[in-house]
Length: 247
Image (cartoon, rainbow, N blue to C red; front, side):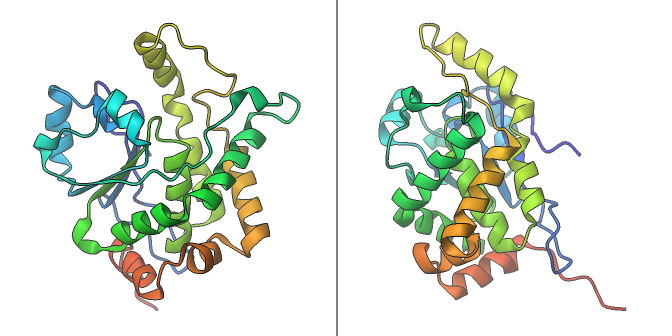
């Protein structure tokens, strides 16, 4: 199954539909997308983007990133929410090769769940509102901040941990091109060993740690983020297909 949608200037734009849930339903196609920076949309890409009829964009980057790299073109008319969820900036100098890339990434993702509570709640409330769909969530590479939010949404919907991990790891199909594009745009930038990587173990570690702290991702969302039961139910109602008939 190919989830990536092809763009000339984007590497990691994909549909989050089709994942089955524990109650026999599935995420609807063409309701929720994840992506790398929509600031790169241009020319022919705009026609492909318009064909998706996106209503709402949730941009998880810092304002300084948007100033430097741009946002989804205002001409496209989407409802636009800048909701940065990363508090502490990454110190890649603290990366320990003995612990590995996956462990380093998982620790950063856990920091997002500590620092980004208010904007995570705003993002989830936006996704939960059926009138905002289709929604695109994105950051710079579409894997770290986007990966955390995507994991929370899929968890709330009832998607299995294995499928959440697999969805995260699909970024690997875009990594080579993403790194090449980044080097072309930033020829003097030094890249740390994990740049652009999305090892499945990183998401597995993160979900394990989040569960150890809070009981489950769902309990984290309800008890720490504070998403209301009504919003959670609305999210499930419009993102999921109808239950299969019994018998």
